Length: 474
Image (cartoon, rainbow, N blue to C red; front, side, top):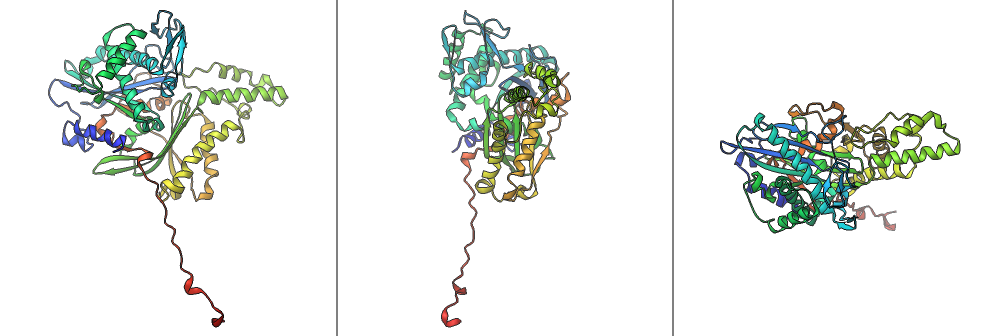
């Protein structure tokens, strides 16, 4: 049994009613005096987003950041600092730690103040801050959605789809999340020693079960979900979604995450079949650096006037990944990256390869190769024209495989998300957290690419023996 099949089986066993097990949104509390809250946590490389859902009313609330950016109050910087005393903080006191998510995913260790810290320890520290802020907000605003009811929690966290095939990593991430949860509610200083203590405790108690209340929180209430699939949950549950193939690309600050998958339904339960996935460090930060490098080359060669672009290059150097990161970029700057440049080529090849593999061997019978493949761009870089041009270039280079085209689609702003002050153009940065806040019983079944066999097309062999013309027939 594959990992995602185990995932579905687990939640079928924990379904509150047979109605929920069939994927229907009947999420009223099981008994009076209990409220179910889903926490959707989009653990980003540059910033983290959290949306919670009151499952009895289906209302969703974006959690404001304690130290977010004024342009989007719901973006929590994925950054920590560490003092010489071993105390983590977000005030910038001590050595700054960035790329927290990548350090965890790639198992990187970092030596700070002469002490080696694992990626899991740093991730635990950061998530403890995020969960502490989230639970504090719930406590302060509880009266508006749950009154005096007891609260039971779900915690749904996203990872790149490519990493969700690694069962060892999934278990470790759940242990990190569980340790962060109990460190968050303890009120203790987030110190290296306390982090180690709670990580050890989460490993010892990993097989325990509990009610899901704050002090009875257990691993079965934690779900690790492919990020880009999560961003589609709201759309898939809507009447607008048709069964078939979809391509979703999340353009983040560091990463360029793509998934090509099929959506189907059996007895009302959504089924996601992931045919191809890839994630590379081709996000907006690297894009801006590529532009600046090319612009410098053009200025040095005399092909570009520095005075014509100095104001824009100054803006690019000051890029803050927390805000919607795109200053106006006119043609003079966009000359910096051409179709034949390595960065452009890497992006195009990544987009193209997933489609080519699916056409040739993964799902060659899909109707979308003839009718057009729907594509959703999400993430902080979705509005950068370059990433849209990548799709056009990739489409042109696979037309010889009888591929029609990409059909650009947008995910609509949901009417049940309460997020005062969220600029409408920046909703796309909350899509993953919004999807993760859903009741896990509604996620449906997710089959990873390793659980799906290639579909080999049978090519009929013609029999020409009866067409042979011998000498006696001449």
